[in-house]
Image (cartoon, rainbow, N blue to C red; front, side):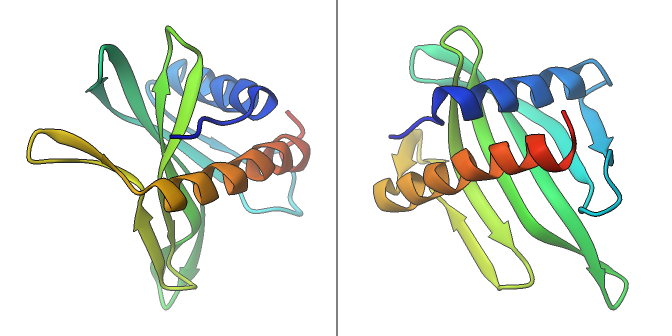
Length: 135
């Protein structure tokens, strides 16, 4: 299982903290040239021996009046370790959806390849978010 790289994790933690300070939800639009970013604290989880929090980060557009993610990712954040693990990816425009870490029949399941691909994408996405939203 692959966590975000340190610099990407720091950006994620900054975003999660900002959302936590706004009752678990925040929409950032610091630059009109890029899509706003929505951050939501979803729920707590027991992730092995550690307590984690699941967050959603998304850019949303609309098509025919419907909200469309471009993309939305969920992450499991382990505060005591300062580790962030991508757990799903959705892009409605591309028809893409993959849960890479999920709970099934009392066990955590991991799609290793999908989760590694999500981590690589999220490492880049966090840096882009920082630059685009002028954090």
